[in-house]
Length: 234
Image 1 (cartoon, rainbow, N blue to C red):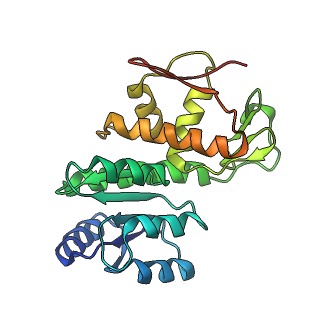
Image 2 (cartoon, rainbow, N blue to C red):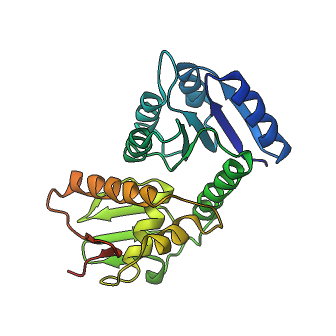
C-alpha cells in the first residue's frame, strides 16, 4: 500500500505542483489549504507523513504542529520561508522532523520524504514476541527499545520523534565517543540528502529539553564545540 502524504499549504500553486509530483512517485496525497481542516481530517484518518507550511492564515503551521504533537508523533516536514532561521529552529524545537526552505526542489522534497518514511517503516517492522537483551540499548539511566520505539530515563518515558530517536541511538551506542554533525546526519537520515548543520543542533536542543522534563539535571548529551556531540559516560 502506498504511503499517505498530507500536504497543508494555503498556496494553491504549491498544492497543485507538489501533489502532482508526489502522485507521480506513487504516493497517496491529501491536500489541505487550511490548518484547522487538516487537523480535523487527521483525527479521523491519520496520514503517514505531513508536509506543512508554517505561514498560513487562521491557523499557522506552528499551531498545527503543537496540536498535532499533543496526540501524534507522525513525521512532519516544515516548509519555511527562505533564510528564515527563526522559523526553522522553532519548528524543529517543537518536534518537526525536518524542514525545507521555499523555493524548493521537488526532487529534494521527495528525497527527504522517502528518507523519513524509510526510517519510520524500519521502526514499524514486526519483531519477535520474545525479546532478547541485545535488542535493547541500556546506558546507565537510559533505556532504549528500538523495536518498539520506546525510550525511558530513570524509568520515565520520553516521547521522541523518529529523527530524535535515531540521533540519540547513534550517540548512545558508543558512550564517551564523539559523533560529528556529519556522522549524526548519516545516522539519522541514512541517505544522500543534504541536511543543514542547524538541523542537527536543533534536534539536540529538543532532545535535551525533553529529557529535562523528566530530569531537570539531565546532562548526558554533551557538546564539544567545533567537534560534535557525545553521550557522556556515568
